[in-house]
Image (tube, rainbow, N blue to C red):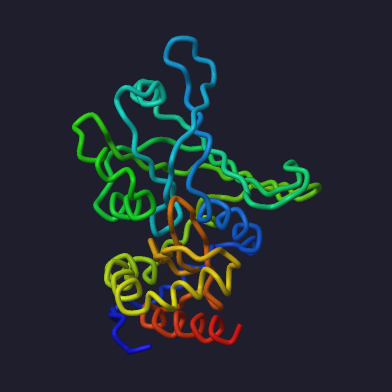
Length: 257
């Protein structure tokens, strides 16, 4: 693989590792959120003040916060305009057996409509079918400021994760946000054959036009025909300069599979 993935001067401040000995608890909760494309969005009904739950397409920013695109016509948007408190529940998919034994992550926080280009870009990379809607004047992006994370990993595996344990903030994530587009373009343009191997050999997916839609310090996201996959790096990135070697390691593993 040619050494053309861009580098950045950003150095790891040590904050990209969740600031807690509970890092192992945060990882599965975060992995579920990164791996899915939809979730159950909870708002407070503006009239009855009862909980109202709707179906929503989601993405995450590079740190792990959920990002949404919503219409002014949607009841949950009207609810949020009155009261920004929201919740989100996502769960593991594609596994057989009792659904109550599958992992799920619930987040509580507030909606924030003041978001940047990075969040918009990651949402549309994840949900390309929404690109047309995003241009309408009555559609708006918002992110979630996480205040609490509740994870259920099956019987007896229930715990809460603090936001600073859940979110992957720090210099490495900051630097990766600056070059993520270049990494995605490089992999999808110059190494699309390798991306197919990631999906079919490492993740057991069927053949499709798989492409990388996002990259963060723990791994990358793949999409094809409305499907999503999550591929973890062999080792978490400690510096953005390690991005190329992380993809090379995965490529070597896929070819040897």
